[in-house]
Image 1: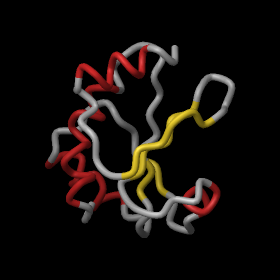
Image 2: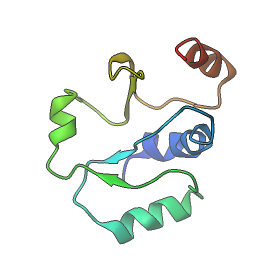
Image 3: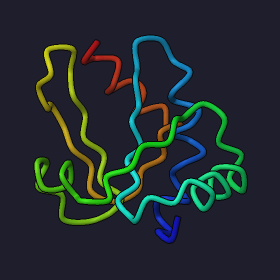
Length: 103
């Protein structure tokens, strides 16, 4: 809720969630605060993403995250195939074309 690059990319990430065969788990790494996170989603008009928390940084440690936002791409076999450090425009046509090569 405090990360400016996260705020920047969330609307395009929300749009990406409506595509077939894509499941997005936006993990909030701060202290679990549902009301604060719901306000963040409402302020950004996020409609398609669920809210998940990792307040003890278990996933962050498992994925060896070093900054936010970090996007980890996992295929249907459960294997990581890509990672983006920093914000990204998930509406970008080149990104969508690249992502479709992994379906």
